[in-house]
Length: 219
Image (tube, rainbow, N blue to C red; front, side, top):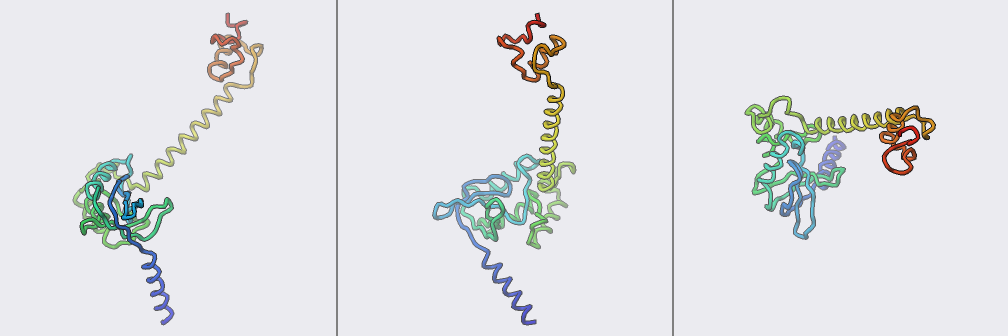
């Protein structure tokens, strides 16, 4: 029993030791859950709001989420209660302005989701449910447009991969269509010579640079 109590106290101590506070003026708002603070030493700190996930800039309601955060903190002195740095080097924090919890406000007004994967707060899910039931903020959007930012980011990545795959396939098809012919004597017709010049970039077919390939057959 003593060992269990000791372990619990040790974990509690370490957790508190890792927490830290940043106080400063908000000098930038990147999106609905990211801002920049300038502290008293003129050092900048990029802050990622903890436990929540606002719509991305390209998502429906993304710009409104950014505007909401800006209206709450822009130019103001805030206190950021931070617990860690994320993989991008941002401080992950709960931000307090004029005694109000910014993270909670964004969820309560429908400008952000509870970030279920990383949420450590019991008070946020009820705020989200209340906002959802009232149709507040993003919850007023058509159902098809209400997409969690994490799902949206994953979808964007899938689209990018699909575009890359299509481009690679097109490049391969172009190589196949161009074949292995390299000289005018190999061309079966003027049309084929023009195809190799214009589509395959075989500039040697147009030695004088007048745009007409293989002038022996393209008279």
